[in-house]
Amino acid sequence: MIEAQYHSMQIEVQPGPRVAVPLSVAPREVSIIVPTFNELGNIEELIHRLEQLLGTEGWEIVIVDDDSPDGTADRARQLAQDKPWVRVIHRIGRRGLSRAVVEGVMSTSSPLVAVMDADLQHDETLLPRMLETFRASPELDLIVGSRYAEGGSTGEWVKDRQRISGFATYLAKLVLRTELTDPMSGFFMVRRSAWNAAVKRLSGEGYKILLDLCASSEPRLTTRELAYTFRPRRVGESKLDSKVALEYLLLLLDKKVGAYVSPRFLFFALVGGSGVLVHFAVLTPLLLVGAARFEVAQAIATIIAMTSNFTLNNVLTYRDRRLRGLKWLKGLLSFYLVCGLGALANVGTAAVLHGESYKWWLSPCSWRSYLPRQTRPRPRRLPPTRRRLGRCSTVSSRP
Image (cartoon, rainbow, N blue to C red; front, side, top):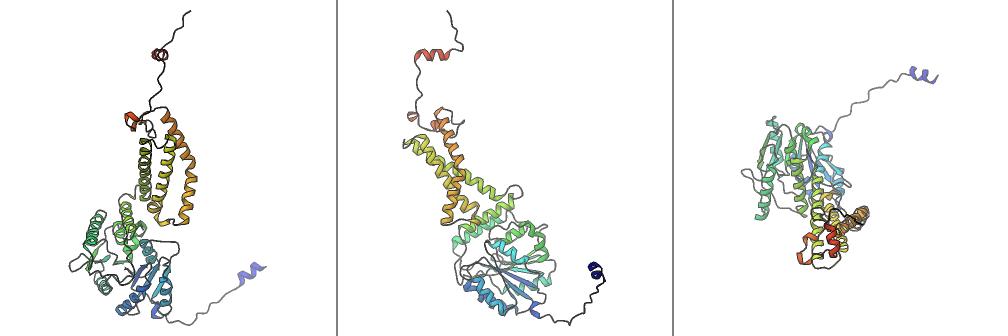
């Protein structure tokens, strides 16, 4: 009965009045992605400068913040209340500039996407020229703001930083699929069709999303470079440190061998190899100076090697999930528990092999052959009668 009544119902939908679409939500030509971390002192000034250049129509800025403790995301949200062209993506528990850029780009629908830093070191006055160049050249896929093109400059960089950047650029060209003078640039504009064609092949590692994009694009991107002068940082601290260099190395490895083996696995294997060296470095002096019996020395070396492996993996292999403070200590203790059985087997097996006088190439854990001849334990000598019997292949008994 109910089903019959349901099918007999007719619903009429009356068209409502047309609603005028405000300019602030009209289709935009370009989205500007700005990844941030602790840029509270720069974000408002950057938005103001972009408004002076581009007005308030036809563009948007997307602030992708990695949960900055200085309140960058909160300030950006306050600005967005009165500025519809400002959007904020607040990432919790996620880190990394490249992944932040990917997340920001994929949240937009503009046909053109620009990427720049929030620290005001990139020359924002280049953006209108990039737009004009794209309008005049529909065949272009990518426009890069270059510090090394004719007319460009690294500004106030010291010579050491110039040399480091030059070496990093040389390494980048080993994996590039297009010709660029500044593949390390973080300031560029790309056509969405080119981005979408490469995004599923992006590594997402490190801070050099432009290098990742160019190395992942098939076919090669049609590019153009516009020169600019790199400015000094206005407020805040530089993010350039050893972690950035490591992430860059990981990106290069991924682009070179990522199709065959995971770069993270390579780091894990290298850390494991370093553990063997640490083990040898601790065990050798303990045995040479006779500071401990072999079993004790082996146990000490094993514990130190395990600690070294855990620490290096925490810093290098799993740096995106790095443990700090009390969490690091808890993680180390858990690592000891998980590896404890293997460690006991290691020490016990090594002690047996060492006591049986096996050659070093049969037992890498036996250090007898590594010791100076005068310090090696001497085998127990047998009585003459037993030695003579030992040389006989058969023993006959006569009445």
